Each structure stands twice: as C-alpha cells, then as structure tokens.
Length: 211
Image: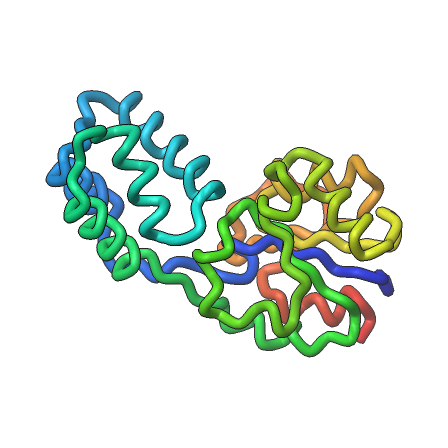
C-alpha cells in the first residue's frame, strides 16, 4: 500500500490529554462560577455546547466568554478570566510516543480534526502535517465534506488516500464511503467487532506501507 496521502485524526490518534484533574472536578469548578447542573441532561447540554463553541473560538479567553455568556449571562470579566486560566492550566495535550515513528515518513501527511487550532498550536505539528480544522473545512467529521476539502486542497483522489483514526463512526466509515483505505488505531484493543485493518501503535504504519 503506497498512498499519495495519509490523513490522520488528531485526538486519540496523534495526541492525548494529560489528566491533571478528574472530570467531576471540572463540573465542580463550573458550578463555583455559577453554572447550574440539576440533571444529567444539563451536563449533556453543556458538554455539547462546549464542543460546538470550541470550534468557533480563537483561544481559551474567547471560549470562556462565549460559554459563560450562554450559561451565566451576568458573569463578570474576572469570572471569564478565571475560567480561561483554569482551562489553560488543566486542558493540556501531548503527542503519543509513537508519533515520532511517523513524522518523517516520506509520504505527504495531513491532519483532519474537529478541534480548534488553539488547542494544539503549541505542539508544532504544522512542521510535519498539513492541518485541516473547522476553519478550513467549514464542517465537522463525520460529514464527508470535511474529507473532500482535504482531498481537493491536496489534489488527490480518494483511492489514493489512507485515513488513520481511532473512531470507526467519525473517522473511518465516512472515509470508506468516499473510497479511501482506512486503518483503525486501537491502542487498548477496545474495538472487538471491527473487520478492517487495526493497529495498536502508529509504529505499525510502516509495515502497512511496506517500508
């Protein structure tokens, strides 16, 4: 398999969050700022809105302002600043160790992610990958249009592309429907019923490519 382009998902495939505090501590901090959670449905709504607003934000300050405008309309600037600083301190991402084994592959490489650029701008990934975020695609995976933006920009056909990701529904199925070859990254061997190519480490990509 010698693709003209390899597209990688980002979160769970190339990078992971450092768990500085537990999930429940996040919600405890939100409540201390005036965000009220009376039920699981409230938490689900907040989580969904958080994900959407993140794609529309330029930095932690912008995200914090938009989030509190929606959930705590009378929030003061200090509260917005406190939330932004809380995110900066506790939402930190790092590359998996096995990323080192793929960054020097001679094949062109791209990243297709639903994440906002400010989340990973400090990692230097742009040195090795052409990066496509919602700013470029104007839509989110699993929408096939997101994948087509990458193909059109880099001038490759679907059958010439390998898509590598850790989520079957979001990363692989849309790519397969377009005609791409796919590889599932399943580091903890959690996916039991997947019949396609599956790897536990990105180091195995070289074997798939015949390198």
